[in-house]
Image (cartoon, rainbow, N blue to C red; front, top):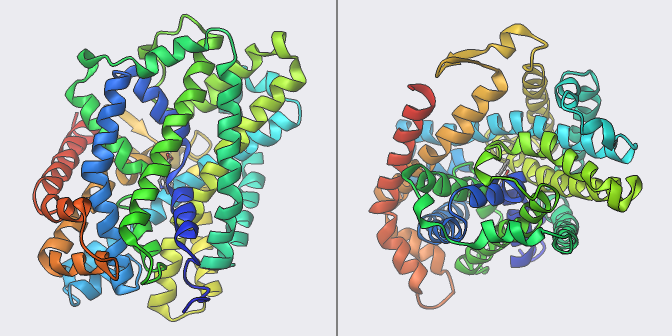
Length: 466
Ligand code: TRP
């Protein structure tokens, strides 16, 4: 058992891999900007509260489901519900969701790689022009970068759990931490950096509205890879002797820590360069900020540091974002790979080949939905606008279905599995139960499902019916 290549080799191996999944561009840009706009310190406290009160119990539920059954979502739902049709369907949804997320997230990862290469090629000045991004994402170059991203994902996933995912995470995650801290230290030395910190930390309770509360919860939920089937799948790779509760706490701390530190990089950078920024005018979209706004920030450093040094700083930032994205992409593609391997009794490589082919086709379609192909660009119409395939995938699978999947997991645990079985899985060899286990026992059968159902309904109304 000790050397099973289909398991993580240690708790740290698991935590790094799961953090690789959880840390993405949302942590680096989305979270800090949301905090600066929506109440600073008050938002931070709200976010941390949701991580502990709602997300940690769900992390534990997903990990226990995975480890107890040794299966990915479809198999886990089937086994726990003893083959009940409705639940198998719910399990299938936990498989379609990561697939669809992989399809649009790979496009995002491709853009980051493209910008990294372009900055290294000395093109920072061009990236900072307003029209560049639109031209770039519709250029044929996208497909070359897509091929490179797919090749990297294959390279990692064909190694399997221990020699692929874990090994890559052990290399890439420390790299990510170092780049993040390095950039944060650098921007904190810039004049006026403190203005950014003021918006970040000063609590502005009057800015906390219901939509801010909803936003903080969604951000915490998405950031921790919940509802995507990832933690069920990774749970199935955990060794029985590993302390599940501790692993979950370490994952939550790492992901939240990266988000908090990212605020020390992103916000001071914005305010050092544009001291008069009004946070409420910053874009809500991480994509807009990263690809349109940030190149301007790096260009504005040129008079002080020179073109080469500014390009180097920009390249570090894009490499950081790219590493964050590709580790998330790897984790989400692993879910259908693991499921297909188990369902079809194929080899891992055959399952990988099939899933990669399907994701690639999907990614090509969504990469072509920015005006190049009309029916993909005008794929659907709701809330008064035409939506591209890319937008639809983000709205449906990222913003709407995830909380619903979280709700299904609560109900599966409470109604089918029974909470004492989950408790037994969590406690496995770990002595007596602590506050988190006791709290989870209560919360997962009471207010967590109620809140997730509410978030789901509110999102459906806001996104599709307004
Ligand atoms: N934290 C990621 C982000 O900020 C979101 C995320 C979590 C994710 N798990 C993922 C994205 C898996 C893609 C795949 O972007």
